[in-house]
Length: 294
Ligand SMILES: Nc1ncnc2c1ncn2[C@@H]1O[C@H](COP(=O)(O)OP(=O)(O)OP(=O)(O)O)[C@@H](O)[C@H]1O
Ligand SMILES: [Mg+2]
Image 1 (tube, rainbow, N blue to C red):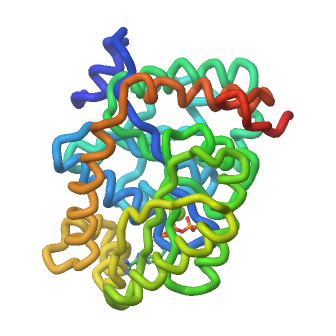
Image 2 (image 1 turned 30 degrees about the vertical axis):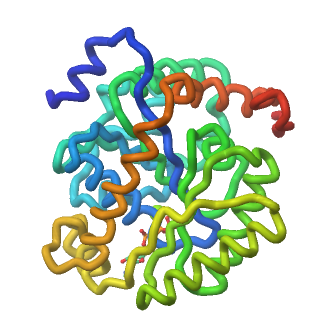
């Protein structure tokens, strides 16, 4: 049994250390899963303990990108009340991941005992991992919105195409209207050159500032890179390809990302499950955000 799974088994009883980060997008196919996987790996290579959960239930593909087949899945954890250490798979470079599983809309039925089980298991994950990444499906369902809103922060991925930018804006608008304080990062993917990436980021920031009266932070810009589709076909993360421009960029992003993350207090890190509970039960976050009730 690998390190983190062994620690999960020991049921450690200390303060949560993990940050939960949702990777989301408006338009589909913009590179979320490739980013989530390779960024998780980059952080893992930098010595962080990272868990990547594929929450694109029914259509997940993290295990395909890794060229491995998971024995269990997130859906099974909920359906069969499995423990986290039973479903966590050991990926490369110390990265742990959880495959999505087959059922559609399983989260919708995850109230009552299923949710209590998830809550208990997730709290243990936060005690063991520095970072828990959630690879979301494209667009916004009530379930994915609830995960994005409950996370400590979210990374919204867009390409430089106007269609992708429009849909990213729509997603950011929806989330910011429900919680203006949620830290959101923008990741511009598939930029032809630095200039195009910077233009996209500047336009997104400007529109968000003008119409939503809020700021979004730029996490970074990843270049268009032929190695990415090649790596997908080889089922090997592009970060491990020597001549991958996107791989080089993502390593730099990961190093920069660690600084602000390290400054967050433990208190801020405790409440993913509490916030998720509020959202699912129609409660409020910070006493001011109306949530949907079920
Ligand atoms: N930087 C890049 N350069 C070139 N191609 C890329 C880049 N990033 C992603 N792609 C390609 O875009 C496609 C979609 O990537 P990916 O599956 O990661 O997107 P996604 O947003 O997770 O999709 P979905 O919305 O279906 O979950 C893949 O075929 C991948 O090869
Ligand atoms: Mg995906």
